[in-house]
Length: 315
Image (cartoon, rainbow, N blue to C red; front, side):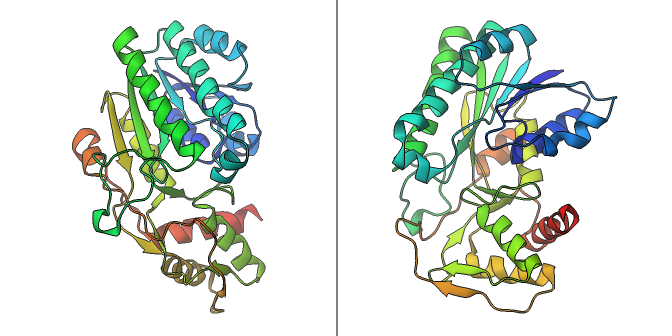
């Protein structure tokens, strides 16, 4: 089997690359290294038994279409994106150029190269917009009402995927990810709090919690998420599927778990809540369980230990 992973030098992308290689796939990685790092691929690239090719190229340039067409992957995993909600608000044109135009380039390359499927990383934290607490965990039946340019681009590209499926029989699955965390995580983004806490705890610095800390998120471990991507290689065609635990974890609970994993007893410090922050969030992944045979298995204490151990080893 042959795959191409855009954003394959990033946090989730590189973990997916490792999984594909372990399963015996041949993998092409496309990444402009604006946020990804070759360090994330160092172990995979050093193993001569791996069929791995790296291409430093931006998905916004026309030549990426020819590259994908030439490499002829069977499955394209599209994870490259402008992933910062705040950047999308301050620079919506840039956000659209990358997340819409760049994504269409990837889609065109997949079509021309004869790929049978595209698996897309969408955002469960933004495409549904504000969800009443009574509707949590939110299902895919909830109206898509994104409130940021970033969320809009994720919704729009899923429409493109559906159109290409009808016009060209190019299959797709769109995975709406919860707050993904784990080793290799960048401290930016919605789940970046996990990486930030890990760094500060190991540095002996106090961790700051904004607001009361009772706000909740659906934190899902990266290995679990990668398993969903892999399962979507040949299942879940034409569907949007939530990938999360379905459980709400408060920031206070997260801090306690991470502090215990780091052997720290110092309490966090609190600061005023940040404007526009969601109060509660969780995704219902019942459809993924039914269609992919997938469900999250990593609990917060286990995932916290993995992040702390990785951060400690990296240092």
